[in-house]
Length: 171
Image (cartoon, rainbow, N blue to C red; front, side, top):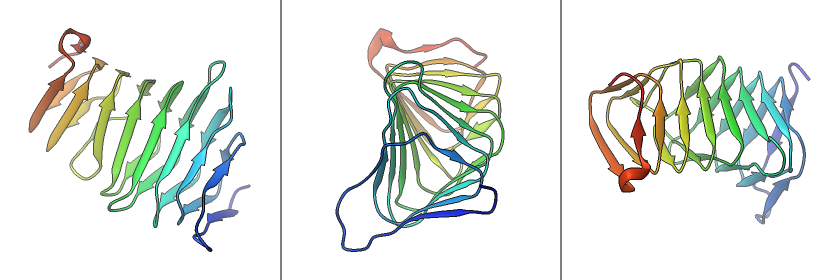
């Protein structure tokens, strides 16, 4: 609900798994490593998801799973937001913080522009679609990745995986 908070706390340690479809309109705070894992789920975020003390893994499987962000994804220093499988829609809102956004085995649709001046970006076996512009300010490694968006390279671009990589947008 709008204004509500869900906190995943460290407690006595151990694994945290949320087998649910997330519709976040408030704040989700991650202080203990957690996996969001529900087959065929359409996750949405119009609030804030903040990785303060641990990592968040969103493992998407099943029939047309997706995560749509219209809010804020805040990835703290030394933290990783890993999204794999299905579709990631960055429709509006922001991706902030000095942590890492790791996208793997999915289709990423970026309506907004993204640059890695603060947030590290890792692209593996995925397709990155625009119309948003991807700007590499520091260092970007793409492995078996297709980029169908404008790409501005102002840093070091590392391409791994041979002919499995494609840059189809303006470069």
